[in-house]
Length: 289
Image (tube, rainbow, N blue to C red; front, side, top):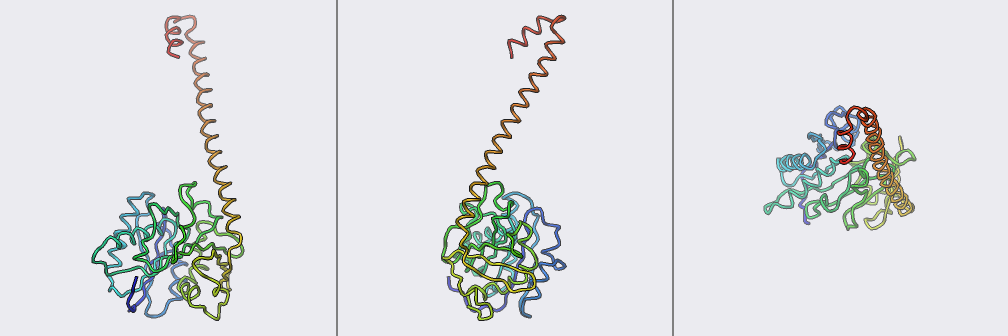
C-alpha cells in the first residue's frame, strides 16, 4: 500500500458497547484530553459517537457513518483510529467497507484497538486499507473475550502487532484499557514502536513478529519488553475458559433438575388434591405423565 505525503493528522476516538453516554471519549473526558494534549497544533482529535448497541447491525451502521466521516476529509489526511471494545470493530468494519470501494482514495494509517473482541473470521482488518494495527489487550480483561465467543489476538501479520499491556504493574481490566495514562501515549505510539526513539530505548526491541508487552505507569514513560509469559498465560486462559464452559453446563443441568423437582412437587400436590374426589382425572393425568 503506497501512501502519499500526509497534509494533516486526525485522531478518531471510538467508544464501545453501552458507552454512548460515557464521558471519557468526549472532549471533556480525561482520555480525550490526554490524547489532545499530546497532539501537535496541526493535528485534530475527534470523538466518534454511535449508538453503542450490542449488535452486529449497529456496528456496521456505525462503520458506514465512520467511512462518511473519513471521506469528508482530503484524501491525504492521516487517520489514526483508536477504538475501545467493539468500538475497535467499528474501525475494522470501516476498513472493510473502504476496501470494497474500487475508486478508494482514503486510507486509515493506524488502527489502535483497545480491549477489542477479536474475531478473525468476521472482524479482520483490511490491511490493504490500513497501514498498521496495534492491538492492545490483557488476559486480565474478562470482558474482551465475551465468554469465549471472541479472542484476544489477531493471527500473525507483518503489520499487525498484538501487544499485551499492563497498568501500574497489573494487567488491565476492560475499562482500564482507556485509562488516560494510556491515552497520553497514543499520539506517540508510532514513533515509539517504529522510529527507535533514543529517549525510550526499550522500544527499539519492538518488531511485528516478536510478542511484546508495554508497561504503562503513572508519571513515567512506558516500557516495552518481550512478552516471555504470553504462552503460559494463553494456557491459563484456555483452562479458565474450559472451566467456564463446564460451569455453564453444570448450571444448565442444575436448572433442569430444579425444574423437574418443582414439577414433581406440583404433581404430588395435584395427586393429593384429586385422589379421592376425581379418580378419573388422576388416571388421565398419570397416563399423560
